[in-house]
Amino acid sequence: MSQIRQPAMAGLFYPADAGGLSAALAAHLDVPVAWPIDAKAIIAPHAGYVYSGPIAGHAYAALAHRAATIRRVVLLGPAHRLGFRGIAAPTAHAFATPLGLVPLDRPAIDGLLDLPGVMFLERAFDNEHALEVHLPFLQHVLQDFTLVPLVVGDAPPAAVEAVLERLWGGPETLIVISSDLSHYENYARARELDGATMKLIETHRHERLQGTFACGQRAIAGLLRRAAALDLRVTTLDLRNSGDTAGDRERVVGYGACAVEYAETARLPDRYRAILHTAVRQVLDQTARQAEIQVALDPIPAPLMSARRTFVTLRTQDGQLRGCAGTLEEGEPLFLNVLKSTIRSAAADPRFKRVSPEEAAGLQVGISILSHERAIAAGSEQALIDSLRPGQDGLIIGDRGRQALFLPQVWDALPDPRAFVRHLKTKAGLPADHWSPSFEARRFTAESF
Image (cartoon, rainbow, N blue to C red; front, top):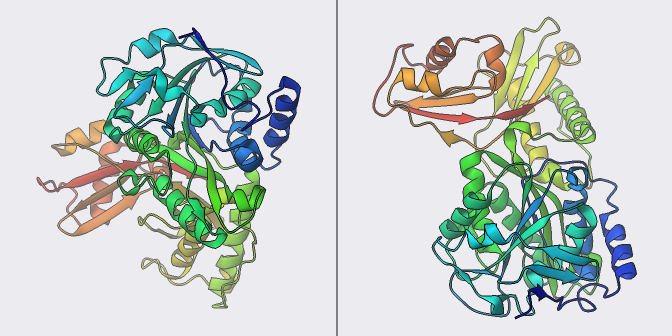
């Protein structure tokens, strides 16, 4: 076997000449709505560029600002040509495309062989498009990088997670998961199925993914296990199918592009924040007047349709709390959830009377987008207090059928961790010094603006 693996999809899935390929990539990466995202990982499709190139381009366009930082790419995709158990690693030293050679990180690859299911299996890469179609995008966007390419066969999510944990690294390492979505449904059915699949991915419900939902579901599931442990937020950047890009709408293939970033530093761009604030202001006014709720925004941008939990905080001009409400249920689109939180905050916070029309215009509005909860293993109140990060952690506690939540902003008023915990117990209707073996605590972070 040659030390260099030659391209098999050039001229089939993407242009075979460097000039035509570069032009195609530039067109697919020209995404006006893209914004810089410090993504640790992306999920992007792998069909022929005429079909999935614009969707994949959205994910890669969001990474362009990190070209000088990313030095290694870990690329995982499903096996289409060869059935096997485990995770296949190559023996080659470089992969070729019309744009040149991509060197492999041989020490990193060789260092995976002690993990369950990982093996050298060069045949798994023969005519396998799931990885190859990503290479030109990576070459075009990044300045200089090495590659760890892996084909995922019949492997449990825990095995994929173990590989990712070994290779995770820091900002210099990017994880790319290659996957298409539904296959050969009609256009309407594909939109329905793919929307449901993206909600599973956004809410980290890897155990419910199936190969019929996403051909790369095993690699996605491994990433989502890692995402849940490390408080990562999944944002859908683009969701379309071949009926939107090329071909008829009778039998389409679905394509989604996602960014996976640390929730603690995740940030919507200002234009999307402005859309949310405008909509919240409209609903606040309509709720105060007890008018019909009407908000016109069509289409709603894909990132504002990502599944999120939100809280909306209302304050008077002098900073006094006037209402704060939200939900801990997952699965609703951000845009809809934040409007529901607004209505609850203005009209259903039991601590306050309903906001009046005269008050509404003068209230300050704060929006908090919550990350996924993570359990805190603490055997005592002191252990819980010691585990908290003041100013960063939101906290949910529960015991004896009671539950309460503090957003991270509450640290401004209660900077002492002991006071923070004890006031939250009181809010839940528990004694301030309460503790029991059944006491539960969960942390989260929030993007607040």
